[in-house]
Structure formats: structure tokens, C-alpha cells
Amino acid sequence: MSDSVATITGEDGKSAELPLLRGTHGPVVADVRGLRKETGLFTYDPGFASTASCKSSITYIDGAEGILLYRGYPIEQLAEHSSYLEVCYLLMYGELPTPAQMTSFEDIITNHTMVHENIRSFLNGFRYDAHPMAMMVGTVGAMSSFYHDSTDINNPEHREISAQRLIAKMPTLAAYCYNHHTGRPFLYPDNSLGYVANFTRMMFGVPAEEYKPDPTVVAALELIMLLHADHEQNASTSTVRLTGSSGANPFASIAAGIASLWGPAHGGANESVINMLDAILYSGETIEQTIARAKDKNDPFRLMGFGHRVYKNFDPRAKLIQKMCHDLLQQLGGDQPLFELAMELEKATLADEYFVERKLYPNVDFYSGIILRALDIPMNMFTVMFAMSRTVGWISHWMEMHEDPEFRIGRPQQVYTGAARRDYPTNT
Ligand code: CMC
Image 1 (spheres, helix red, strand yellow):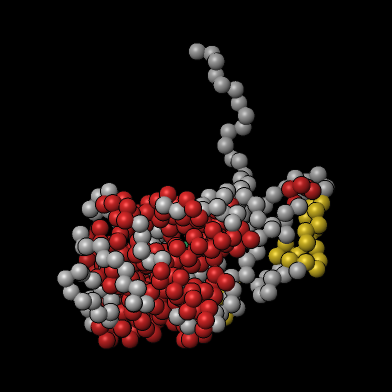
Image 2: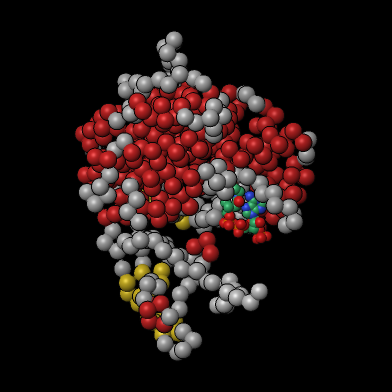
């Protein structure tokens, strides 16, 4: 993996030879691990845009070309041929399952969908108007108190069973957070249903009536979940790795990831898209005025659902759901003024020099926010659904980290800019 070196010389003339690493795809990477020891220098990289924190074989993104691969497979091919659970298997174990492996994996996940009864009492402790994401952070963290038998992070079997439990229970927890929030009854999972249909039943079903999953809703959610399953070292995944690097148990580590995902610059963006569109409609502002505000450097307003740290081309996930979004809006009708505004905004930004120059395309959250709204998924559940989909990515990275012989506790450096050393004033 390393074939040549870059040399860096510090102020005192001491130099370090930095080995160059090459991954399967992607740019050449200078290995700076020896830099501090050999020269006293370290690197400054706010936002970590030039820093690889680990080696990973799970997901590859080429932001310039708009490429996303899960374990080497293009996202477009997985979206066409695979199911969400098959993608979970692929991300966790590295290969597509054989039919027997898939059946066994589905059985395991299906058999772990229930949660301990006390989790329901735990949820009832939240205020009636608690945001489902706040409940998810707390409840997933609390799960560690229910599984003391399987949180030995040094035991590969414990790691695997925790991963399976998390994938299996996340839809149940997500639905229960919504049920608590809306005062609906908690339904037990129905293991005769598929992963996504089981989730929609727990969320929208009632004990008094038989629930029939809507195939349009299930197919749309299945695709949205598959597209959100992993995205290499984004903020929440890096949070899971950093949290887990101290030896924290998997439930605590995933809870930290959920907290990170909640922010509007990350997974909270799909909810922010709808809030933004609602606010524009309410204010009566024109598209031109909205775009002008987004471009104004004195105004903190940004167009939610536009731009991406990594994709400086159309986000391939956005491409895949853009068509579904347009089709569903035609098919389902619904909140027409909001949908029309979204489509106008999409058109206007794609033709606007500011957005074109900066390569700020509509991202996956722009379309997923609109699709979820068209499917009547409550807005405060949007980011919860993202968390549910991303759990497999987080836990696959957490498992990979624990298998990596080079892994150490994460501990970034800083450039100290505070007061120089000074004495406590003793004169009165
Ligand atoms: N609206 C208006 N201007 C923008 C936007 C936006 N949404 N995003 C970036 N810019 C401008 C920014 O002002 C800067 O302009 P200039 O070069 O003149 O200073 C330039 O584009 C580059 O922006 P940046 O802040 O350096 O880009 P970043 O890589 O740090 O930020 C981002 C990426 C996603 C946080 C940002 O584009 C953003 O805030 N977008 C809106 C929130 C959003 O949709 N987030 C979801 C991301 S996709 C889901 C996920 O992976 O979690």
C-alpha cells in the first residue's frame, strides 16, 4: 500500500519522510503518523477535509465524479437489484449473501425485533411533546442497560449480536418514539411482514384494525433506506468511531451517532428542507428573493437540501430518488403548493450561476424530505428514519474499527490560541 514518500521539514530543520499510501480507489494519502515524533510538527485541518482518520473497506465516494460504492458495488446497481436488508448484510459482512445466508440473516433480524417491555415504560417518561430524535438518542443509549450479557466489545460474538440487535430493534424504537409523541398505541412487531412494512405498521397501524402495508410507501421507503445505509466517514459515523474508540459499548456509540446526525447540516437537513419551504410559502417570498438571501454573505440563511461536503457533482443518491420524487408528486398529489415551490427551487438553482459555480446541487435530503412529506410521514420522523437506515453503516464501521490492528483511541490535536502562561493576580 505504501510505495514512496513525501518529505516535510520543521522549523528546526528536522525532517520526516511521510510514506504515501494508496487505497483501492481515491487520491494518494500522506501518512503523517510519524510527523510529530520526528519533527515536532502536527497538522491543522478544521473539519478534517484533508485528513483520513482510518482505513476502511466499507464504502467509497468519489465526490467529483458523483460515485458511491458499497463494498465495491455501485449504488445504482444495488438500488436496482438489492433490498435494504441485503445491503445491511453486504455492509456488515463485506460480501453479498448466498440465498441461505440471506434467509438466515433475515431470520436473525426478524427474531430480534421486539424490545424489552421496560423500554416502553422508559419512553413513557418523556414529555408528550418530546421530539422523536431526542427520544431516540436517550432510548438507544438506554439499550446498553438491557444487554449487559453482550456488550463486551473485545468479544467478536458480542459485537455481532449487538449489531444484529441494533438493526432489528431500530424500527421498533423509531415507531415507539412516534407513538409516544402522538399518543398512539405501541404495537408489537409483526414478524410475518418485511423489515420496512413492519416499521410502517408499528407506526401507522392500530390494534383495532388489520393493517395493510401500502406497496408504494414500502417501495419508496425501502429505496430511501438503502440509499442512506452508509456514507463513509461523515460526521455521525466519525462520531460513532470516536465514541467507540474509547471502548464505549455499541449502544452508547450509536446513541452518540444519532445525536450527531440530528444537526440540520447533516441528517436534520431533510426536516429543515420542509421547514424552509413552509416558511417561504408562509412569508410569500418569491423564489428570486429566497435565492438572493441564500447568496447574501451577510445573511446566515442557506438553502437547505443544497450542497454537500463531498459531492461537488450531482449526489448519485439524489439522482436515484429525483425521478421517484417527480413521479410520486404526480401520482400522490398532496401538498401541491409546497411541492410546486420545491420543483421551482430545484429548477431555479440548477440555472443560477452562484449555485452552478459552487457545484451546489440538490442533495439526497432535498428529495427525501419531499418524498417523505408526500408519503405523509410526519416531519419530525424524517431524521429518525435516516438514523434507522444509517444504523447498519454506523455499526459496520464500529465493528471494522474494533477489528483494525492500527486502531487507537481518537484524540485530535489543537492549535492553542488562548492567553499565554500568566500568574494568578495576588495583589488586591
Ligand atoms: N446555500 C447557499 N450557499 C451555500 C450552501 C447552501 N445550501 N451550501 C454551501 N454554500 C456556499 C457557501 O456559502 C460557500 O460559499 P463561498 O465559497 O462563497 O464562501 C460555498 O458554497 C462552499 O460552502 P462550504 O460551507 O464551504 O461547504 P461545506 O462543504 O463546508 O458544507 C454543507 C457542506 C452540506 C454543510 C452545506 O452545503 C450546507 O450547509 N448545506 C445545507 C444543509 C444540507 O442540505 N445538509 C445536508 C447534507 S447531505 C446529507 C448528509 O450527508 O448528511
